Length: 435
Image 1 (tube, rainbow, N blue to C red):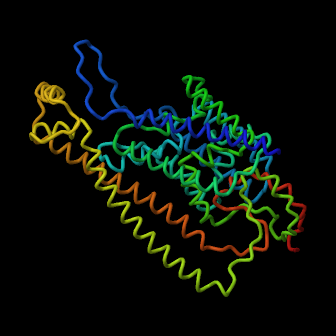
Image 2 (cartoon, helix red, strand yellow):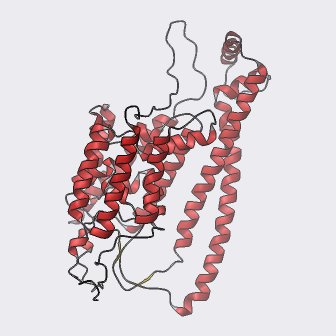
Image 3 (cartoon, rainbow, N blue to C red):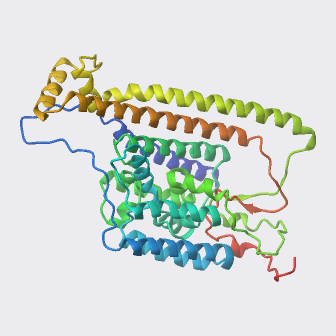
């Protein structure tokens, strides 16, 4: 591919990311301050948690998920069938996508889990928990088999791949940190009850439901165009659930291999062009013995930096949470009835809020209790999120001191989607029992 083509494609990628940021900005820009009360019958739309689609046959949906994950695991680890994985992907795309309309999906379930963690009054239906947990459990044993053949969002991108190109290492690392940030923002907005942005800005759900706004159609088209040249851009650089599966897959008991069982890699490099996700690690010599002392010192220093950054992030998030909670209506009510200052709120707005309190017949004790609980939720959520982001960045730093030792070309257990594209590329047709 020519250098000019690369420039155009990177321009498309950056444009898509910009659109994502602008779309997210519309959520973060929503004011927490109470709107004026109109004389008409108009009412501001209230925050509403998305309802589960499990009404007819929850057992059937969970059974379908479990069966699909089991089949994908067998096809990728034991059978090593790219064709079987592809057909399974099409079947799951039809069922979980067009029939079940993509809901409830494990990706969006992150928000339900986060909200329920900080709100004891919100209960999660058991199928939502099952959809969230099962792909992670399978990833711990067999790798990212959910991504390979079960996820309907990944299936669309898989079908769109035409001429994939390699993403620069430095850019991929930056974008992966961005995914952690997106996950943190999604959890933050869910735990504070502001919005479920993962569901709201799902670029592919409109395809399965045949309904989408103009801006989402544009976003979907941008991702599909990118998918032609960059393997699964949403899965690799946006999907917050993919980040969780990536970490779980690194611990997998059984993993996808390029060379058939019992065979030996001859380093022919034929597998590299077949992986559109750049998820194959080249042979590595490891760390030289004369560098042990220096690298050990580096690890010690980086670990101290990690501890410092995590503590600083938690403290900063805790303090920031209390400050940002002051803009919530429940906290403003408490401040007004206690005659406390409310920066940014005019006297007219204070009078309007006070009038609404009297009209609703709210008791001071109830208002204060609600405000205290909300402030604590903001504090804990911000502390957890900023500490988590600090940990992610620190781990990236520590990983620079870790050196692999390998004589073969091996799939990267975290980044590999277990799609099976590399199976047929290996010329090693080993007979069982021989090397």
